[in-house]
Length: 272
Ligand code: ZN
Image (cartoon, rainbow, N blue to C red; front, side, top):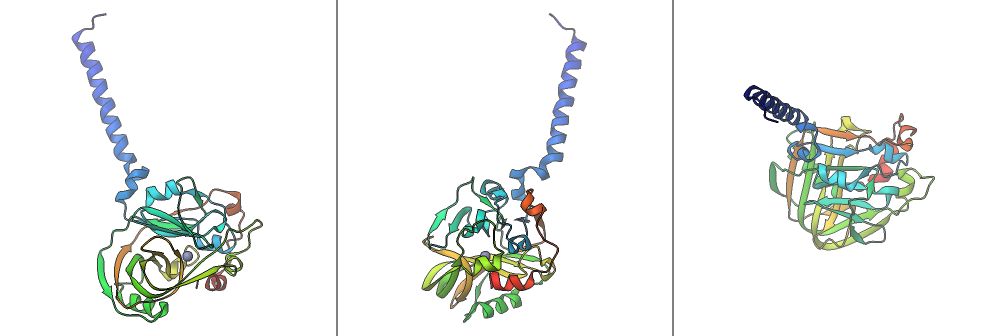
């Protein structure tokens, strides 16, 4: 059937309007689409440290989701099965038996913090005899304690002490009790990367206030939650963060969890 010029023009205008609507919609939806989060310089966190402290260990977020929100970070695994380290877009599971494995996209985490690492500052660190003095040195370097920071420390470390926790059985114990079954590993003259975050004190309950570091060796054969370290020469990269995206687990374990109390003392036992 032949259409008149005005009919054709009408169809043409309708098509233009549809294209404009599609463009408008895509612009409106852009900030929310997962692959565009790369442009947002924010932390992405799943669950809270308090939920972990009371034993909420059911994995709620897949590593495929985490990877869409960061290439750098720390966390744990379903049932608290080891320590998570993400560096340069590669995700590792440091298990309590001392092995380090790559993480499948389908694996799930009950607690993790990631971001796309975009450091503003890189500078050499002074020697530090232990983790406490390293943290003091870092505090003095921060422009302000009132933001989150992602930190990466690369070097050959004279001493490193790390731990990992074995998978827990249900009913899950709290984190302090689970951590009492941790395996501790110590190394001398080991090359690798300390990675982690500094959380401001006012975010207590959401994440561990102060520094929380994990370590992975340069050969990716050992890793875990950092308990202590000695530094002679190392390079610090610092990424200040002023946005936090908090994804709370949508499951009965979290929704029925006892999250209204102060778990500060358990936190010291579990993480320091
Ligand atoms: Zn840790």
